[in-house]
Length: 487
Picture 1 (cartoon, rainbow, N blue to C red):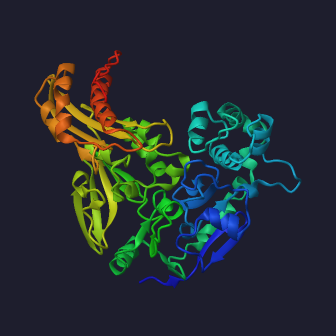
Picture 2 (picture 1 turned 90 degrees about the vertical axis):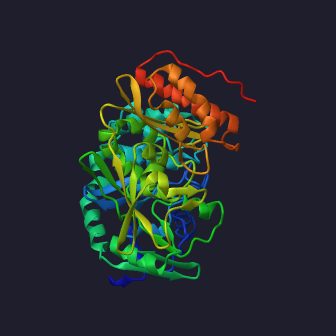
Picture 3 (picture 1 turned 90 degrees about the horizontal axis):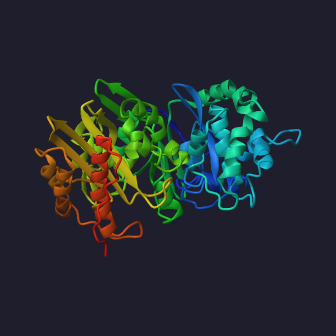
């Protein structure tokens, strides 16, 4: 067993913070506002939607020191060991002048009531540091996770485009001190297991993946927290007791291409997987761009999205359609399971006590295969899925030789549409075949009505997505809409 440390350490702006009594469910937002009386960071939604609480977190990876925007309202303090937290207060200058991001927001009238402004400033700060001359699509993507109901986005976008007119990102404090901070964070990496005991329970940070496996053998009922994009809401919305907690941020975060397989560590974030997936499965880029906002994509992990078993998780349907497999580990024993078999029933997955997802193997679709995934939600950006359809079809000689179709939001788990697949395989690749297969949806699914969508709407959308897939793969320009009556 590795040596044990009983406190966490991280840098907050320019100061080292050491904590030995922080509760497992303490959010970074509450720590900043209540414990440190740093109230520039605002609380809006308390669920990672509005972006008013946006801060930057710097962490070490193979590329050096990387800063990412995150939602402080759902990020738990225990996960910050070895990190650098940067808040809006850090932008203050000794001479009283405004930071370039702030000055641009003032000059372009990007703020009215001002409540959301610190979050916008921090999101734009993170963008400016990595991309000083962003194009409009890049600005819009950077602001997906920030909501404003006063100003509208046009002046904020104009401010974002003008920031470099006010200063040089290369001379900003973070850039000037990047190597110094990298050295400081490196000095905090001591290889210890962290165990913190508090009146509200215990949390543990494993030294490495092998240590994680050992810990879960002893604590099989512990709550595993990677990005806390789901668990954070258990705390802020349901007031749930999550102790004991095992924080696994920074573990299993490798991604590699092995022949025609992408191997993704369970701790890889959506942002961390983006470049590799975009290079090898570009059809998934539009979906990845719509998973939460940038703050959520920087925190949330693909393994966590699978592990929680949600019927509306965004990654399981396309990964099922691609034939993905997951590696589960308990102690030193590993087993491989097809992702479609991992989901048993609502709230029930094929995972034993003390077992955790270690990695995901995703086949790259062959060049002669049609593949696409479509997300339907009330709001285009940063919204919960109502229906998500994923399709992988091979056509040989004008005949459908293979079909794998998976949906989220249509059942208690992500599920394949096996009756629809059977109706397609062996039939000509034509719209007539697609239309003939539509009644099979009634055999595969009996969707529920909830606040996201009615059962009738979900069924109609699921059928329409298959038609959309056919037309897009054919390169057709005519939009085919099923004219079913919806009660």
